Image (tube, rainbow, N blue to C red; front, side):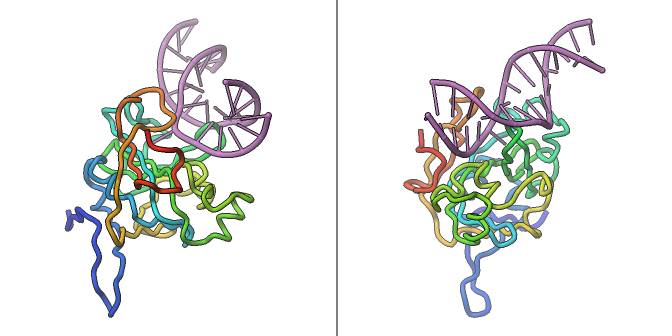
Length: 202
DNA sequence: AGAGTGATCTGCT
DNA sequence: GCAGATCACTCTT
């Protein structure tokens, strides 16, 4: 195991501030530690994306989690190495992006504040305002051009780029969205006051 | 509040 | 092997 990065941080290199990449070790921890630290991080896919403002945590002890009943063909990436992507198709139409943490656990990326690649995002999403480009897991996947092609790929390699937050964000927690089991478990993490959330906090 | 959408999983034969 | 329910969603009414 390498050095563990427990907090977003910045370092000085080459005369300017550089945002460090979140390494695989960053994700090799309990989801509840990792999830709040992702708020404010920048997610890019082929240079397109923005700042993470909303995530949800899922783990093996959690009846709402795909991993609750053990590995299946669909959820196999959740039991693979940490720091990799788990993508799945939902309702026959949409795709959802997760970051794998400890085995059987992952973090659903639910919303971004778009910062890069607006042309590509608008083209893929078709005539919505900026605030609605990535305000939901399915929307975000569509805007970034994600599908099952990226399932199982490492997050510290192309096409992904993951940059730690340059400054701390105020993180609020609440109930997860759209589930019917584990509904009372407050494992939704959002940037407080963000205008880019999928839904208001509850 | 309801429709659309089709893969996936469960629990039976 | 098959039928039926479910689904970490989105868009429109």
